[in-house]
Image 1 (cartoon, rainbow, N blue to C red):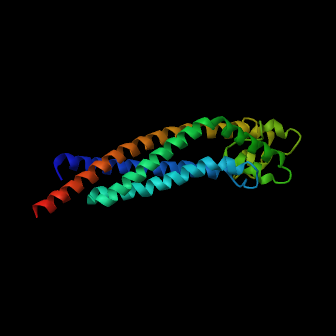
Image 2: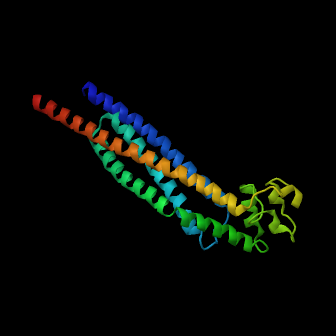
Image 3: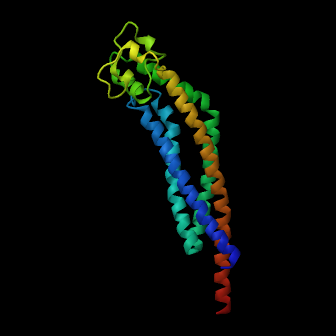
Length: 229
């Protein structure tokens, strides 16, 4: 393999390492969103709400595995591995762009679904108070709109933190409402997911092109070797 092809090989290896990192970031982000949803699996909107973070986790795992295969194929200069890898990278590029566009289009509906979940948790606070406790302790908030929601009720300990043994209106009066806090959290991290998705898609497209170049170079070298022998 000539000098130019060797450079492409190592660039492909570096791009795959970047893809590995981006895949890990997507997995972490998706897991973070799911973990902060808490134990609310019996809500009707949970499947729709969880679809985006679950998709992010799945795509992140696929990127991680295929990028690892790409690293091996580039180092070994294996035509079969690199061509298989390039096909998968092209497919992933298309899926990644679809995901980014989907998140962009469904952003508002997704945020509205978040508000509905908090509303339902608030409505069921007397029967299933642990739902609101999950939000209040996990997002450092109190009540649906604010602590004033508990004016005629006892302020739960979760309004003062997961480890609090007692709480009062005075202690929690500066806490934001859970609807606002949850929406802000999701809105901020959706933007991160979108930009991360674009970065990963760019890396995948370049990796696809470079993998095709390496596979073609390795194939030509084998043909020349067979011809001279």
